[in-house]
Image 1: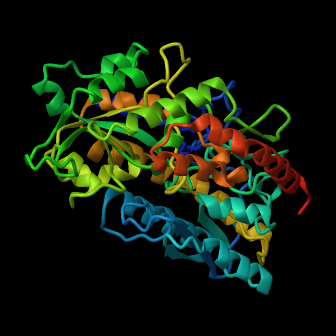
Image 2: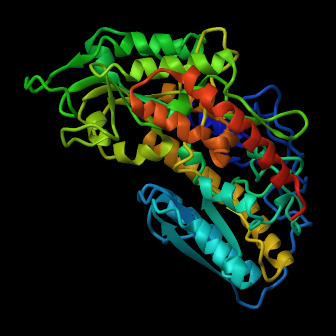
Amino acid sequence: MKRILCLMLAAMMLVSVVACGEKNPPVTDGTSAPAVTDGGDKPAETTAPVTTEDPNALPDYIPTDKYDGHEFIVLMTNLNPDPAIVRDFKWTEGGTVLDDALYKRNTQAMEALDITITGIENYSSSNNGMTLVRQANIAGDSNYDMCIISTYNCGSLALTGDLRDLNDYGCLDLSQEWWDQNINRDLTVNDHLYFTTGDISLVTTCAMYNMVFNKDMFRDRGWEMPYELVRQGVWTFDKMKEYILQVSDDLNGDEIMDSNDLYGLVYINSGIVGALGASGERMAKIDDNGEIVLGLGTEKAEQAIVSYLELTQDRLHTYNGQTGTGGVSAVNMFVEGHCLFRWIEHVGFPYFRDTELDYGILPLPKLTESQDRYYTPFGGWDAAFVCVPTFTANDERTSAIMEYLAFTSRNIVTPAYYERTLTGRYVRDTDSYDMITIEMENRGFDIGYIYNIGGIKDMLDNLAKSGSTAFASRWKAYQRAAERACKSVNETLQADK
């Protein structure tokens, strides 16, 4: 049964994302994968995979030229230096299942194409990936063949003309299943796409938001596990809040509520953007004309943001894992039983692997029961996207190597992550597996996160930190400037580079 579920989830993940996702597990029968929901109004469109007698055979359009030992250099940057972030092109043999899969993919490419692959890591909150790429472009140096660049760097580099348009780049075929169709759709502006993701990189998938909960606390209180609420479509923000407001205790009796005590929820500052995305609304999105439009002015967006702010201002029942006091980390608070729920990204799962913690996984709740589905947003801080600097020495070579790596990743790396790492090491029960299936079906990325149009992302972050719930007045102060900035971003991204 578990194997069947693994295969079902792998098929669903194949083309899942929504404004922020990625990963396309392998299709092994030579047929197309199920249609993906985009978390918006319509499903993402995909191109049926090339049909061959052997579904794992390299499609004919991908060149298999020999490149005379070319060193294919991949710059990998991220704002989060956490070791749990996947290093797609820094690998070791004989490590984890995922390490071995990355090793196999990379060595296979090196042998088949006569290249070497070098991954250069630059993980730092100083956010200097943009500087490195710009410096190389200005100098006319092809220092990097490909980059996996942090979210905000991608937006900045696209606006300064420092990235290639991947929709018209060599032999890349972004309509194939090994490229994330939901990401492609959500980040394409007037047919221009400067960064994306897919099976070639796991980084953005690991930035997917969800809830984890302490199952022992549910048992101790005589509560039913909340999985059925999800299946019935009634796992809502208010229902989650009901649970949270019943959990609070000054565990050490010092009359000071800090990280040593018990809470219903431990959250992070960027959770406000996650709450917005979970409602189906976004800071910005692509309209039917292919342009970016702002999304904060809706009644539903305001309801989602204010509901989140009101809950997290309750210092008795909720705790900010980034700004709190007491000396216990947010990770250890959950592991040591100091909270019922924790709002995290998938990148946090490795920290629970070797513990005895009995935890479950849930999608972020709906705003209301009438919401059409559960939506799964991503954290922009940990996500990173695949892109190519403007100055590259050989477009055909670079694009051929990228397409080869993407295709082979679909058959080697993706199943190693979903079937043998995520489900084999981090998911501890079938119900949680079902919940991740739901998350994968409905995930997506908010383009407003990437371009921070008119400073609206910063506005939301600052509002979450301020202790205020006055979203309406704050949005009113930003709206006009944001609209002008949105127009400028559209014009810049649509211009021929």
